[in-house]
Amino acid sequence: MNQTNSKTRILVEGALMVALATVLSYIKIFELPQGGTISLEMIPLFIMCFRHGTKWGLFTGFVHGFIQMILGFSNVLYCKTLVAQIGCVLLDYLVAFTVLGLAFQFAKLFGGRTVAGAAFGTFAACFLRFLCHFISGMWLWGEYAGGQAVWLYSAVYNGSYMLVDTVICMLCMALLMKAAPKLFAQQ
Image (tube, rainbow, N blue to C red):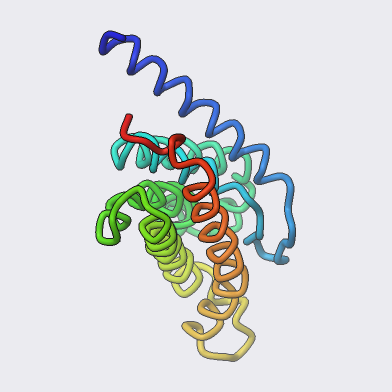
């Protein structure tokens, strides 16, 4: 297969993974009142990252984040200033989903495309996404803290769904890596 066909195939696969992630984002296991859900939407993004590497993982995460931003743009409008709206776009959507593409970089510390690598890479990327939401919660959504420390509010609120989401993703990716290692073979 020549390089053009290979890139086209990867782009099509990436589009399919973004579409699947978008559909999965609507199948919510649990949803918090001010945003944040437990769903399986990150799994296709991680699959793309582990199949094709960091560059394609970052690109796929960015595209998915952009689509999520468009679909949830009313959330951005709750921000009172233009600077806050830009912060929301970046921290709650674009950067938060793009960092998921770094999973394979972290996985290399534990053998790359192995069960341990998949679990650790998924954990580390989810932690980076949590940090994006944590910073956003402190900076943009602190008014919902109701008198408690803003950092604590943001940590508990975002941690309550991200921790469960992270564990689900780690288990799914480890099981996929164990059950179908050829799916993740060097492309």
